[in-house]
Length: 218
Ligand code: SF4
Image 1: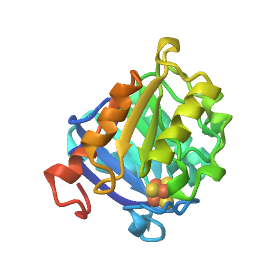
Image 2: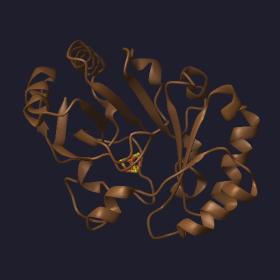
Image 3: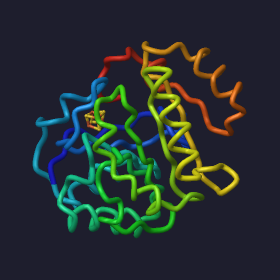
């Protein structure tokens, strides 16, 4: 495995927003989103092992871990599974932020582990790379689907996706809408969601409000 950084911060996104979380950022990503804010994770990093990562995680003294990147699922499958097994054995709550393009069934999750499936919208330049079968592989009540939007056209793309795949909250799907930081006014997006009576969670990237938007390791 190759690890870019491990740090303690607050979770800036997802249903765990605001909660203290240890972030394990892996090196490498198979996508190149137009708005990517972690370009430094594409190549920078050190070789690591699941056991070595656990040592660092334990040293932070918090029971919540987010595996992110880059794209964590480009790491070797056996090692990623071993890390998930070790985290489960020690009762960590785990979220895996994945970019929607890789088969999530590549790894098996334990109790208290979940995916944040980041479905890339057209303005990311990566929407045609999505593996839409992931929408059938996730477990609605467990996993979350995140959309990061840059334009009104992105929003319409999401509505079409939700309709076509029946990703409805009444069927248990947990939807998150977030504006690309500094591109869409939060108020504008909230007004879209309310006008459509969409039962989705609105969020902004909280860590970019607390710290400087470009700051690393937070
Ligand atoms: S998936 Fe994430 S890390 Fe990869 S290019 Fe897109 S925003 Fe950057």
